[in-house]
Amino acid sequence: VDLFAIEIYNGHIYVHLDLGSGPSKQRGSRRRIDDGSWHEVTFRRTGRDARITVDGFHTDFKTTGKSQEGSTSLELDGNMYVGGLGPPFSEIPIPGGLWTAVLQQGFVGCFKDLVMNNEAVDVASYAREQDSGKTGFL
Image (cartoon, rainbow, N blue to C red; front, side, top):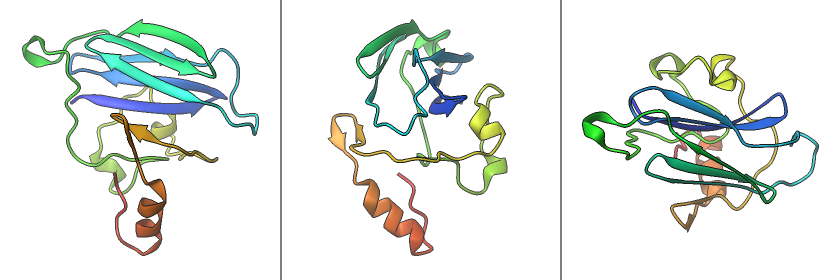
């Protein structure tokens, strides 16, 4: 199962990637970002090469493996969760190194201007759907 996750743990941002043959975990922040200030985080991946940028500081890394059949694509099926994992939590395979998921801690804080694949995501509409009792997954 391929995986992509970004988490804040102990004040630092981490990227988790699994292209199908084992997880990679990379710390992306040089200093703590749980300081009540706005921070800009960008993640880009091409094949096995990845870069996370936090407040203008780049961290380059390579994923540890390749997907099945030698592909370097990230194959994700199902819902995307922003801010935490939704129910049923037990049905989602969680790698041990993704601490906020293992501990079942969601994101506490604010974020704005979410862009995926060069397209803005209207996070407010998903939040309204969740408040209405409907699922609001991306």
